[in-house]
Amino acid sequence: MTQANKKTLLELRKRSKLLVTIGNCAAMGGIPEIKNYREKKTAIKHVYKYIQGIENEDIQEVDNFVKVDFSLPGCPINGEEFLNYLPLLLAGQIPVIPDNPVCVECKKKGNTCLLLEKKPCFGPMILGGCDAVCPTARMGCQGCRGLRPKGNVKAMKATLKQMMTDEEFENTTEIFGLRDSIEEWEATHIV
Ligand code: SF4
Ligand code: SF4
Image 1 (cartoon, protein in one colour):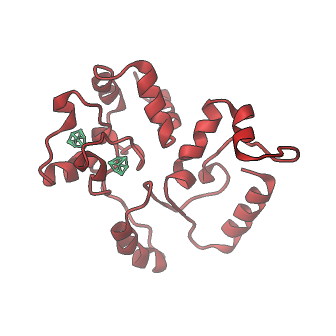
Image 2 (cartoon, rainbow, N blue to C red; image 1 turned 30 degrees about the vertical axis):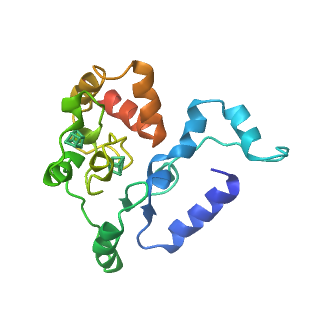
C-alpha cells in the first residue's frame, strides 16, 4: 500500500461508522499478493515502463492498517449476497456469514465431489456463499472466499497433499492470498 493509499484509508476510517471491504483483494491480498512471494523487484518492471519513483510496497490487506467491520468475501463477490447484506449494513448492523463450507452448496447442486475423483478442491475449509460456482464448473475451489472460522486446515492439507505436490499446493494458495491465512492458522493451532 502506498503512502497516498494509507492516507486515504485512514481518512475513510475516520469518516465512517462502518468500514466494509468488498472482494478478495482488499480482504486477503488477492492475486496482487503473489508479488510478495515472487519476484517483487522484477514484477514492477512488467507493470510500468519507467519505474523511477514508483513505490513497490508489499501488498497488505486493509485490516493491517484500520479496523474493518465487515468483509464481503470472494473474487468476484456474489451479487445476491451483497444485496442481502447491504440493508443490514445500512441499518448499522454487522452481518454474520454462516460458517458453512463451499461443499454445502456444492452438494445441494448435486455435483459429484471432485475429491472422489482425486481432483484437488479446497471446498471443505473455505467459507461458502458463492453457490459453489467453481466445483459446479468442475474446477476445484481455490479459496477466494477465505478460510472458514471452523475449517480444519490440517486435515484438508493432508487430504490435498495426496493429490498435489507441495509446490502445487503452495502455488494454489497464493492465487487468492490464502497462503498467509493458512500460515496464521498453523501458527495458532497444533499441526
Ligand atoms: S467438489 Fe469440492 S466443494 Fe464440492 S463437495 Fe467436493 S470438496 Fe466440497
Ligand atoms: S468455489 Fe471457491 S474459488 Fe470458486 S468462487 Fe467459491 S470460494 Fe471462490
